[in-house]
Length: 494
Image (cartoon, rainbow, N blue to C red):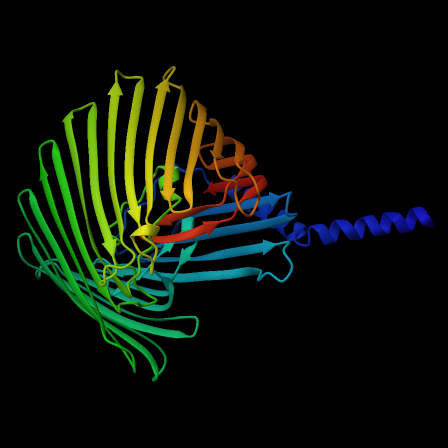
């Protein structure tokens, strides 16, 4: 009897330790079975679109699963996105089944169909019902989009209509209406080519939960290009019930001549916050790991600044990139200034190198010059092709941070090996001169193994410790907590 009670107690403890194991395993098996049984990519091509009506042409989809286990905090997390799209000629329909589960007590878990849609296309007309994404201009008035890396998903659930009259000034008209949670959103956009190289557009969007909780956005834009020059300008206003009026202005100038390309941007946002837009950041999205750790997040309520970036290629094997950006509030508070230089040099057909350096100065909001934070960052990357199918890569980054609280040095390195485009292995290490206040660690080490099967399945497993970090894109960021354990990622397409 005692042995039986111990066995029962053991079974209960296993269930409590992993409350979602059965659903997780079931979902994973279904995703693998669907992707294995589905027709491989590159099979018989679908017939060209025409006016033959509705008939089943193809079924395509993808499944992405991320499972992590932190042994230090005894925490399991699962994220999964299962997307299916059915092409029936003039009509396309699809859905997304999404899951988030965790062993953390009190956390909000979810599992179910998060998106579904049906879309009709014929000649100049596109009509979509269900979930959709849309961008007006450069996003000052409206931009609903998905960026999975930063877990940003702002799709609307409703109806979107697009009409394009190519024979009449290449006129494009878009109308939307839909919901996001308790918000009701509607809007419209029109763009026309008045002359060769001259486009004009206007947009409007509104969101409201009630008459007393309403925000309206309206804007105009122009896009002019002639030879090597291009100028884009967009101005928008924000009007909220019993709220201050706001405005946003964005200007971009481009120059493209042989061996040289220049992009200059200017932004001015004042009381311009809106839940369904994403104005240009006019900041550089860094691929250097240590530079991405300290991002500047766009604040549409009070921000102005500029960025100038030049790309010079004196030869086929050499590319030089330089940028200078500055952002601050209108009062001059919370300034952020960064200079960046990158040199890419190919040596022969097998050796590729990158050298990068950056300097930044930042003062936190409400502080003075005595609290300025200076960061000096250097990075180098070397990729060597041993053979046509095997290569190794080395990355090293070094950052010095100077502030009133003292100096801090961070180092980051990666050693990687890839073979035949199906096997990848890397070892990542990071060290800091100041211990992390949360984990009390100053060194992190993680090994990663990646495999690719049948051109449709990518599997990667990472084991070790990883420092907490920011992942940023387009002026928006997501905080990724530390990991002391393992992370499994499986991406399949069919």
